[in-house]
Length: 185
Ligand code: 5GP
Ligand code: MG
Ligand code: MG
Image 1: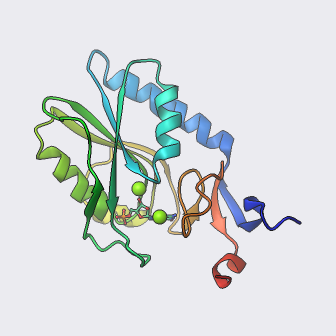
Image 2: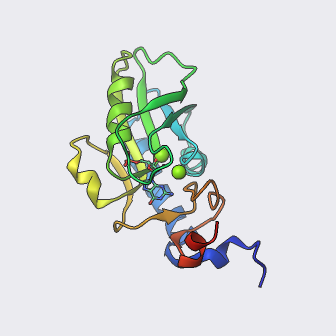
């Protein structure tokens, strides 16, 4: 067994590559319908949304623009604080634009709620949210998430952009880590 093989660190696979691909295609079809005849700017939230952005954008057969933001929310802890800092801002002027925020996961929703109101203050025509994953706690926040890939249990997951200590983002599936991963450091 090769300790370098990331999938050996998974305890269970929650969503396979195939399930993810199918769902992304469905979301893309919905988005194409909803934004027909309108310009569309996809705003990816670094770094977690890189994979879903890449797949979603390519599943669309229409023109889109892509821009990126980096914000910090968690710091070194494991729970969202609601204290958000912009590490990298957009290059795009949002005035009059239809903005679709692309996220990896909504947990408490605190990060996204802050981000949505920040983006709305820049004069866009509309701001909606698309997330690959949503956890039960997200219900506590009242921000409407228009497009949700999957509702998942309240467990810490990695893969498809989501990291643990910056690793596992390149996993093609989404799953939970085996206990031995947390005990070594
Ligand atoms: P929120 O503000 O919604 O609580 O947290 C959002 C951010 O927390 C996500 O963008 C992600 O970076 C991180 N996060 C929340 N839940 C998980 C999880 O299960 N796994 C990983 N890897 N990150 C998570
Ligand atoms: Mg994120
Ligand atoms: Mg992270």
